[in-house]
Image 1 (cartoon, rainbow, N blue to C red):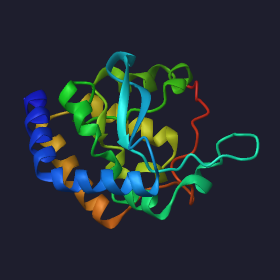
Image 2 (image 1 turned 120 degrees about the horizontal axis):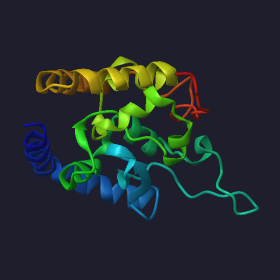
Image 3 (image 1 turned 90 degrees about the horizontal axis):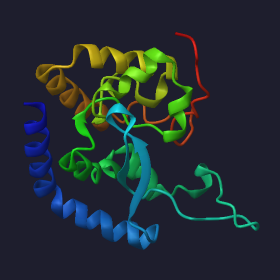
Image 4 (image 1 turned 90 degrees about the vertical axis):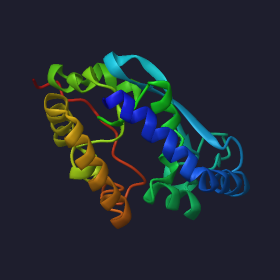
Length: 198
């Protein structure tokens, strides 16, 4: 039922949001440049790596040594709006259709974090990652990594269709209120340093 719902609802959302998707593509090309879609390797179910799709939110501004500037210096007002409204996540619906992701599940994090997880934290990869999840409606980027992982594992142990519906509805509320978008004023969450405690 979960996979059928993911596929059906994602296709419906893409159809309904198609005018908005087209408009965002135009504005991203105008204000941020190419490429319009941001691709990044992320670990999915059982740690299998896939290409996560999102709308680009930062420029390619570099310093005199051709190194990318910090995130804060590269994100524009338009890019910040895409993030705060979660509109940058729309292309991830294609990841759901492909089967790399689910609408609800632990958020797919960086591949470089894989060797840093302890045994309990690694359990977040027992299910498909999601566009939204239990941790996202309980603090998103404003909570600690340890709490975020505990919430992810709780979801793995308690996943159900009704829970997914609750998470989707509460996600809409969070997005509208723009709660938990970043941690301590940063562009996104802090970098995970690892926690080997069981």
